[in-house]
Length: 306
Image (cartoon, rainbow, N blue to C red; front, side, top):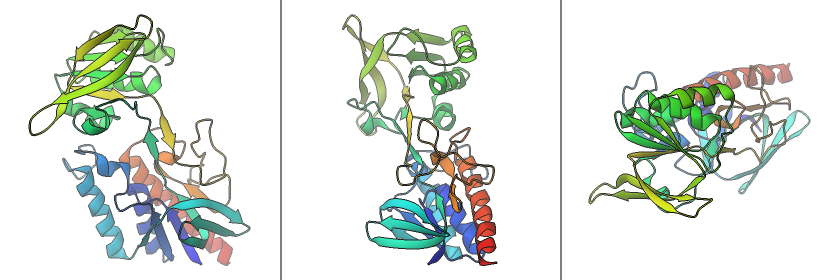
């Protein structure tokens, strides 16, 4: 039996692992692949303290080096379920079952993709899912924001302070976002809305490095198509938390509800990072969650032993 099993080896999970080992807990981090954490797919990170500019892959490697240096044990395996059996937690994986006194869920979340030609090939080459992360790379340029909810308008407003022009492409003729965001977006001089339209293709050119050049739009009412020149495409059509493996209280979208100590509705099970109901999905908050949850898990485990 392990003291602490952490499901997910991204920044949040590895931080929890580092803290767990420092507390003297027998700690295991489970990850489904060698490339862990959404941050590893980010071209450049410029908003993480201490690193003015670093690639997401390099930063992820530093997390791994630190975790291994302090003695965090890691294993590559798919986790199928996590459940409580009294004071014992059972973690079922595709390579067998594990037992733990406490479990931290750090499985993250994935932005929903449009699924159109050019999207996958141009990720980090003009296609992004985070204005806070990538907006500064588009200063004084033109970008397209896809979506009509709170996230889309929030990031359109962030981008409007950096870029020359923001086009918001929405498949309907009205927005789902709250009124205050709608009012601010309508008032912004450099935000223009393109209604009743879908992105059919993202086009990128370049001989050595492909970059976004334009999008092909289709009007859902008329069927007409048009080309729109742009340097970047920011996509906000939803985010999917990877929380199916555990049966705890979640919000309507599937994010795990937690208290201030990252505890879930099930004693001894914690959730951190993007898979929990968090105000923002950012690297710095995910790392903070990991430290808090490991501290709480240690207190819980000490209570069990007493």
